[in-house]
Length: 248
Image (tube, rainbow, N blue to C red):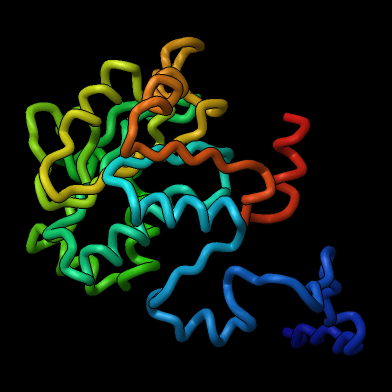
């Protein structure tokens, strides 16, 4: 049986893959300067605002016990809120971090999920895990969740609780009804800080059901509460995100 002939080696020019989008030579890179630096980085030690709106949000969280961060996707609302929570915990200003978000599917049904309540909620809470892991590192995050320093719970499990000495972050609040947000706001206890984040224009609920915009409008006249409204100029994702939001 004759041996199969090997294919001729292609030229070096054929082996090169030309990128569709050449790498920018200048500008801000949120992932670092090189792949090696990204691979070696275990967690983010410090977080700095990338826009005037983000700086205003971080300052508002420091100075107020209740802050509402409203703005389009990609403005860093959740990330900055969780980073502020981690900083407060590390400084000993609070005893624990409580994170919550509604279990609402984004326009599609994923059916029944197997497992216990933690396994069922994992897909909905994944963005919070990602932000915490980026800020603390995976091992430290696992240890702090095991000892109760960090708790992640769905909105439905917050009723009846009083959260003292805690930093509370309510994410994706645009997917909460007026009654749900009112219930969450009244969980705030002594020596605690609460931050609600959401985009009133991107709710997955039926029109008119979301209570975030109405709640924010009513609370603007209350002293001691900060309402921070971020805009397209504060988006730190790909520049196309800001461009798309102006026409979508």
